[in-house]
Image (cartoon, rainbow, N blue to C red; front, side, top):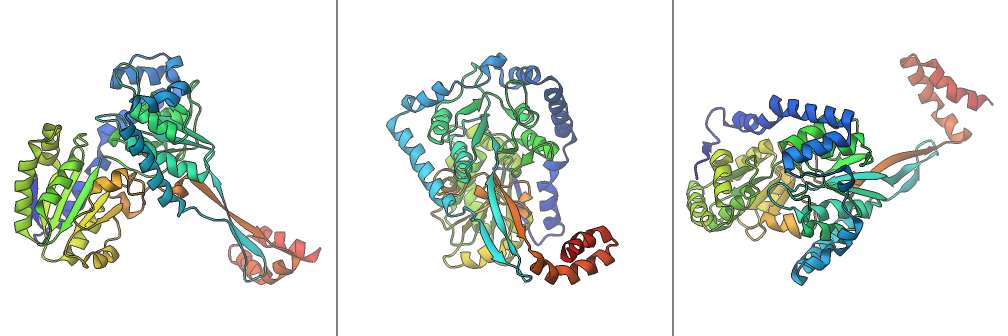
Length: 434
C-alpha cells in the first residue's frame, strides 16, 4: 500500500528514522498559527473562543451556550443501548483496577542525622481534560483521562471537547463523563480549548494543568503554554510499531496497522519492523485485501501512502535498536513465544507494549486498564503514559530538632564555605547556639 520499504543495514537509515519522526516538531506554520490563537484567547477571552469555534468546528454558539447543561450529562446514559452502557462501565472498571494499584502513599522515615523526612501527595486542584472530537468521538479517552484523575482525588475535573456543527456533544461522550463523575464540560475544541483552560475566560475558569491527546496543533499549544499551565505529556496523532519475526501472522499484523491508520487525521505513523521480508510482503498483501471492507478505507489508504514504513532488520536485537530510535506510542511484539522477554528489557522508549499475536492495540485502547494517552513523536524517550501520578503533586517533608541539626552542621558549614553563602550556614548555626 505504497509507503516506504527500508533496509536497516543500508547507510543512513537509522538517522533517517529519527529525522522523519521529528519533522512535526519543526513545522513553523503550525507554531505561528497556534501562537496567533493563544494570543487572541488571552486578550479577547470568550469572544475569540467563539470565533474559532465557528471557524474550525462550524458551530455558532453564544458564550452562555459553551457549558454543557449538567442535566444533559446526567441524562445521556439513557440515550445509549444497554450494550453500550455496559461497555463503558466495564472499561471504567478495568481502568480503575489498574490505576488503583499505582496510587502513591505518603511516608516518613529518619535520615542519617536522626531528622524526620518523607513525602506527602496532593491532588491537582483543577485539572483540564481535553477530549478530541475531530474525525470520531473518542468515548474511551474520557475514561482514560477522568478515572486516573478521580482516583487521585482531583476535586475539579474540567472537560473541553469540540462540538458538532449543530452545537451538540456526542451522547456517548456525555454518558462516559456522567459515569466518571465529570460535571463541568465545555463545548470547545482545539487550540482555543487549550488557551481557554490555561488563561481562563469569563465563562471558562482557568485550570492548573491540562491533559489529553490531540492533533499537531493541540500538541504545539501544550508546548507553548507550558509554564503558564501544567502539561501532562505530548500525545499527538496515533502511532504503532509492530516488531515481527517469521512466526508472526500477517493477517493479524495487517489488521493492527489498518486500525491505527483509521484515526484518519493524516498524521498517524505506522511501522512494521521485521526480520522476515516474506512477512513484510505478506502484510502488504493482507492490508490491500482487508482495507476494501473498512468504512474509512480512503482515509486509511491516504495515511498508509504517506506514513507507512516497513523496515527489514537482520535480527531481533536490531529490531530493538530501531524501536528505541522510533520510540513509538504503541509497540506490538509479535514474535516467537518466549522472545518477548528479552525485547521488553532492551526496548526502553515505547509508550505501551502489547505482547503476542493475540494482544492487538485495540485492547489497550479500550479495556485492558492502562491509559491509552501515551507519548508520541519520540517523546517516549522522556515521557510515560498518563497515570495517577500525573494528577498529583509531591511535597517533601523535613523536620529537624536541635540535636539532629547539630549532626548536620559540619556538612552545612562546609557547603556554606564552598558556595560562599555564609548567611545560609549561619541560619542553622544561630539555632544551635541558642
